[in-house]
Image 1 (tube, one colour):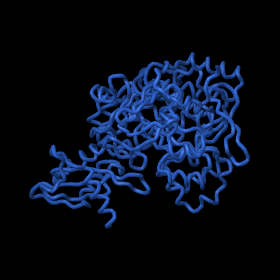
Image 2 (image 1 turned 90 degrees about the horizontal axis):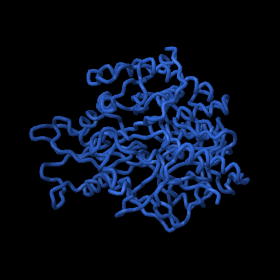
Image 3 (image 1 turned 120 degrees about the vertical axis):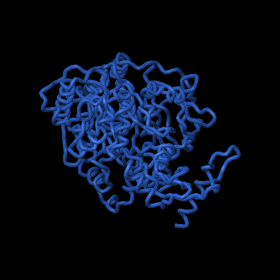
Image 4 (image 1 turned 90 degrees about the vertical axis):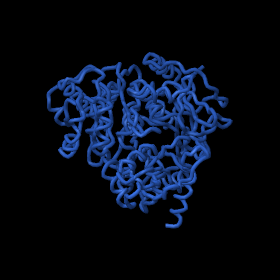
Length: 553
């Protein structure tokens, strides 16, 4: 029996134990699929896919087969298509051959700095060729720890200290000064350097480590501090490969992505996906709707990947209807049905909807390009091949090859994240329809998603609570047309102390990234908190009050 194409899983999707994915299995799949000469998707004159996907074969050498390390995947793409552009970011361009050389020089420079196999290298850079070289180079030697470019000094110190990063890669003196201000609290940090300095050191690297994790990706959980999600090479490689198949990404395609590289949507679902499928990643140093539309037209992009907030910003641009989008085959997006309908009508007629989280290597479920439009509008599709999905008491749970083994140096959080049978508790609510497709119903945990960034209510509460005038604080999420959600804080002041909304917002903005700063602060009188029978604050009542205040404003 030939292997199933993506999206061809049986209607009755029952959890089954996933087999371990290995390079040998990948190679056998490639050989079997090539022998059977399975068909690829074709597109009619209206841009609609008409044939099932081949998820195992691409023209030329298969980038995934046999790769133990994400750096090897880049090198395979460089061997197959050396002059093909790997990354286009604004005015920057790099082909696969030059990017592979740069990554090897970064790896060599890191080894000269004493970085050993598996040691952690933090990358604090904006999207660009330098980020890609740092990512692939760090992963060849040790483990990459991406850092959000919006972090302030205190956030940076927290993650660098917890990760025990040996080297931090930055892009200039401003960042060096910020790090210097917190350096006394970072005894493990040996060096602060740049991609250019590493490349000029004269080192080279022909050995890609395979045993250590590829990434430690920090993400907000329900606790006040971010947790480091540990992701292995085979996990992120297979996720990139399987998702690329669902999206019908072909060699030579041009994949426009608004995702920041410090997020798994940028590192795994953009950069690594394009390397595995031998396509070109088209991005921007920072997402701007006008610039993204210009890039889609100028670069003749075949795919667009963006979150709901990005889609809303694109749809607001008057030039959207005027640009040439004739090369665009697939929009890989998510969000409310109204936004998805508008994307389908005005940007690209074929949309792919998705569900994923950092703990599952970035993507868990998605629809297929061959699905009818209503499927992508109403569901997030089926799990990637080999992943298991089930609903327990309304909660989405996941098991399989993509799921993290746990959080870095946090046994308690790791135990809490899994049930007794090894299923990841996502904290999200959903249901599985009769065709085995996931419908997302909302979050069960106190998590906010602000413009694509995850942050816990607890983290913002801890931040606001550090103000000397604050006695008690509770944070809720309120829907926002542009950002999806924004945090709103309710604060009770200490007796005899004063502070207003502007002062509290400014206090937070000075100490944390903008997405963690409350958009509104409402003062609560002592004894006026809405409480449950057990004495806990009723956040549903606070959310209702926040919404009512927004309507009055």
